[in-house]
Length: 222
Ligand SMILES: [Fe+2]
Ligand SMILES: [Fe+2]
Image (cartoon, rainbow, N blue to C red; front, side, top):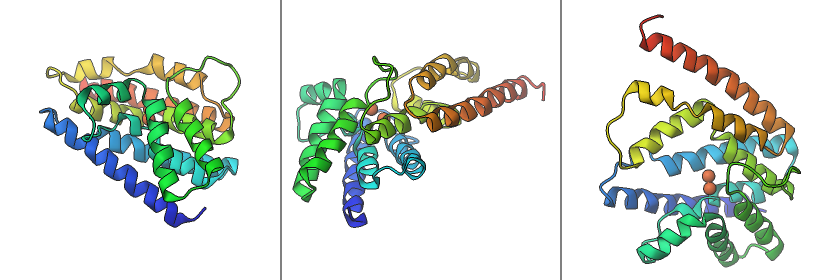
């Protein structure tokens, strides 16, 4: 599958992600650090790495990574209730929207079906079944999305996400108390591929060290 097609997918994803940013601003909330966009770019980067290591299909995995959170991108053509429904079941609605978009692009049915599965199945932090998600492309989309929620990247995203939400002013202390370590460990347990678990372990090691240093510095101990 050509890289031109992938560029079209990327452009569409960027456009839909910008609509989400506009929606956040229209609600009087800050889109500083652009959480949803940055998250998606991070997931694409991770998916690229996993594709390279696993020898998986590039178009399916990278298109899936770009489109995986479409269901969380506000669509101004739909009413607020419909948008709320999309957000609540973003795997299904995202897969549906991606399917239609790819069909209009002329992508073959089998390829669309596999991307659909990857988007549909990526939702959640833990999996019901012990076995890795199938096919490999869906496992890669899951792992790329979850790895983005582990380690220093996740810390950055957590801060960015906080700007996107309506909430009271926070303190540094509140921030480091919400280091999300227990949830990161749980996410690690639910990764599909061995290489992803290795990457998660490295990320967690750096992250624990970072938190230790951060706390010490903020308390004037370093
Ligand atoms: Fe998602
Ligand atoms: Fe995501």
